[in-house]
Length: 115
Image (cartoon, rainbow, N blue to C red; front, side):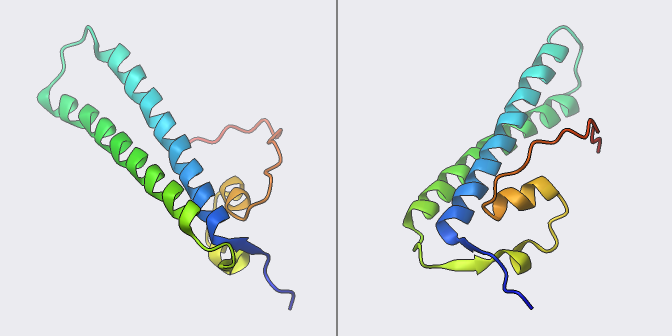
């Protein structure tokens, strides 16, 4: 059985930080869009609370990004994990490829993924 490719801890932590940063950017965009949509509409206190939750999530993600970046800088380069076992249950192929430290091929399938 061939051994799993190795991903170093600094690379893994760095990529996790970039993934969190990208998601935080998406949430920030959602906040802007939601604010524009709600500016002239009557809103319930519950809707305001839920909209504020986006900001809460964004703030936490930015802090996690910071911690991951610092951990990536401090992690020993000699510490590496087998990517096959580490990523075996990650169902998002592009994410798994990036976390394994490989360059993801651009998607040209034309498919649009909805939740």
